[in-house]
Image (cartoon, rainbow, N blue to C red; front, side, top):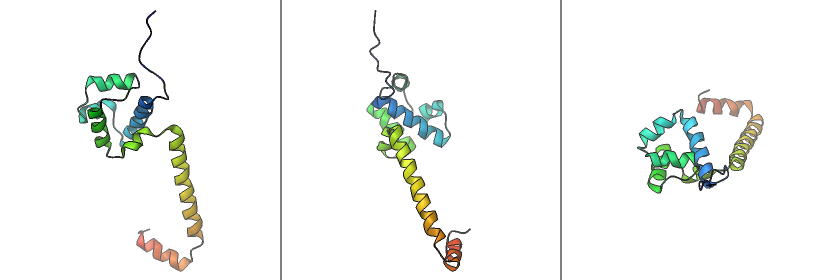
Length: 116
């Protein structure tokens, strides 16, 4: 029996990369076909995605440039994304807590600055 040499492991570096491409793609509101066209990606990139492999470096560079984010954004695990979201929520909570301590007079000044 012939075994498949391709790694379909969802925890592989390639799988993490493509999961983050999916996340960034959805944030931008674009479809896969648009990404492939805009980045002028080859069939080898589609194959890499199917088998959870990293694309060739030249295609990886095109994808990173398209999204205009740091390369590290493509290698965040689910746990790291959750932690980052919690950190943002915690920061928001701290800001809200600090705002609640501001006097009404200072709050009016802040409202003018941010055009509320």
